Structures are given as structure tokens and as C-alpha cells.
Image 1 (cartoon, rainbow over the protein chains, first blue to last red):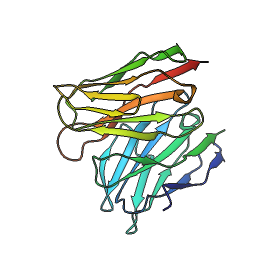
Image 2 (image 1 turned 120 degrees about the horizontal axis):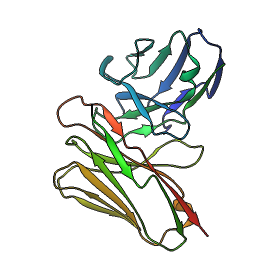
Image 3 (image 1 turned 180 degrees about the vertical axis):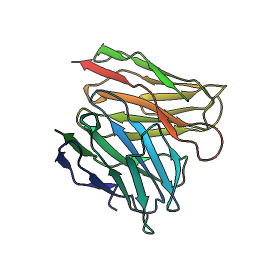
Image 4 (image 1 turned 90 degrees about the vertical axis):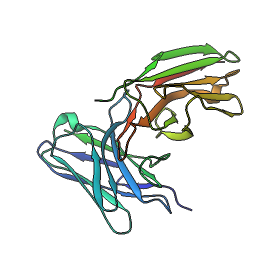
Length: 112
Length: 112
């Protein structure tokens, strides 16, 4: 049984560009949450998707958007990249919106 | 918004000593989840507590959820070098579709 997978593993972009990160949840899970983790910090909640709808959103600007597909996989899009967007982006899946989350290995985004 | 603080921020212990990290939320939590993140890795789910005053044990780890469901603790007995990492508590606020807020984390270093 594959766990949570994310792609790509690493990504380098320049300021102003746009990026799309992808996540496939653990089998049987219907909820996907996205987190941003800066170096030495805890994960910061970006948003959560359940039944193809954004259910909750953290304190992130509208440049951060997402989508959940019928197969429960998800994408995170970030427009107009800033240097401060450099971080590890983690996807976590769960069965339901309040239960334990299983994290993927993350995508390391570097903005130059 | 909801804030979740953990103390201490860092802890160095000799191998074999005990270790405790405390988690305090500014609001009542629906449940409390604990995660461990090894250096360079992603958060790994340890346990979830749901009931007020609940205590759960996993081998050398003891988890407790406070009576008011606003605080929690993780105690490790006789630490080992494999316990090294950052321990995060996390929890959704009470009510439906509440975002999961991660604590600030406690970084544990075990000296052999």
C-alpha cells in the first residue's frame, strides 16, 4: 500500500514565476491538507480539501490556491512567487477532516 | 486565531534520562495529535487523543490530554538515541471543519 506521494521532490524557481505541486493521498483517505514548513519551524496550515472543496484555509494570501480531484489527489498552486515562499511544502492525507494525518515526503521549493 | 505553544523549545538529555514536552492551546481542541519529525524528514504520526483526561502509552512514550482539552504532554522514559527529533503536537479546534494547528515543536537531542 503506497503512502502519501508528492511530486516533484525538489524545485527551483525565480521570483514572479508560478509553481504547481502535486499530491496523491494514502489509499482510503479522502482529505488532503497542505502545509508550508520553513527551515526550523513547525508546519503552517495552508488549506484543506475534502469532497473536492476547500474546507479550511490558513493565513495565506490568494496567491496560494489548490484543487482536489475526484480521485482525491490534490494540487497546490502558487502564483507570483516571492523569495519568502522558499520552504518545504508538505501534503498530508487523512480519513475525514479531524483524524490523524499521514504526511508525504514533501517538495522542497527554492525561489531565487 | 488559535495558537499552540510547546515548551521547552530545545532539550538536550543524556541517553537513559527521561524527557517531557508540554503543549498548550489557546482554544479548546477537538483532539490532540502528536508527530515526530526526524532531521531532514517529514512529520510522522505517533498518536491521537480524543477524550478529556485521556492517557495512552506506546512502549516508553506516555501521552496525556488535559481535562479542559487545551493542553497535552508527551513523556519519554529512558531516552535512546533513536528518540532524536522534533516533537510536534497538533490539533483541530472544536466544531466542524476546524483547521489543524501545529505547535511550535520541541527539538530533542540525546547525548550517547
